[in-house]
Image 1 (cartoon, rainbow, N blue to C red):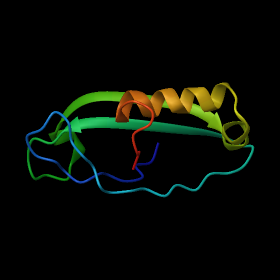
Image 2: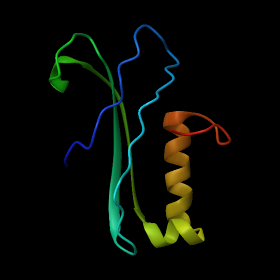
Image 3: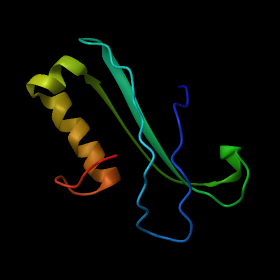
Image 4: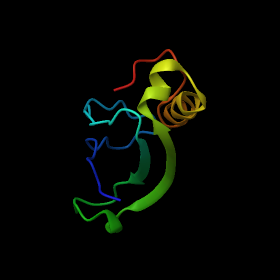
Length: 92
C-alpha cells in the first residue's frame, strides 16, 4: 500500500482540528481500498516508524455504489464517522 499524504501535526490535544484536505482519484465501478493510519507524533522525524501507532481503519468500496447507496456507502460512512466524529460535522 502506498502512502497518499499526511495531515498537519496538532500538538497536545485529544481533539485535533485538521485543516489539510486531500483530493483522491477514484475509478468508477472499480474496487478500491481506503485505509487510515493514526499516529501520535513523538518527534520531528518524518520517519513514521519513529512515532507511536494509535489506530487503523480500512474499507473496500466501489465508487458507483457510494453514489447510489449500498453497503459500500454505509461502510465508508461508518469508517469516516469512526475516525472523524459524528455525521453532520464537516469532514475535511
